[in-house]
Length: 146
Image (cartoon, one colour):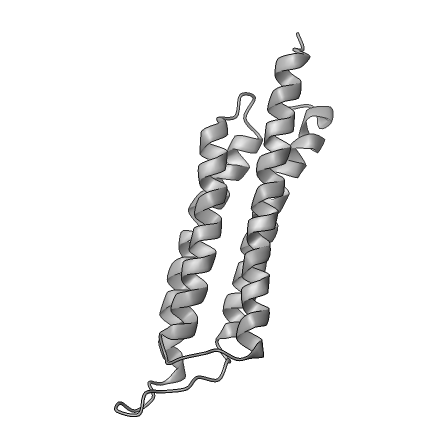
């Protein structure tokens, strides 16, 4: 079991992943109400057409989140798995947001741009998690504890 001294820096590794998923889920939920512009040929689909992409991408985000959390509590975390998990979180957030907004028609107003800014914020959170893991790995290599 890790000591409290070892667990505190590890908070910097898994907290950005949790915040990234929380921000993405919040934006996915808010995006359900964005107004859409429909094609002239086909009638507008119902608004519940956006629920499936939100549930699919939101659910798929749990796998990389669990991987980051498990690696943050491991004594020897695998750096490539943490990076890959953070990249997967950002890609799922971007793809999910695009699928939600364009599955029921076209969206391109100020609400869409605000949501896009929130989703791009997940990339900043992912970078902070990767940087924290890199700092911890370098510190462990420079100052090995016995």
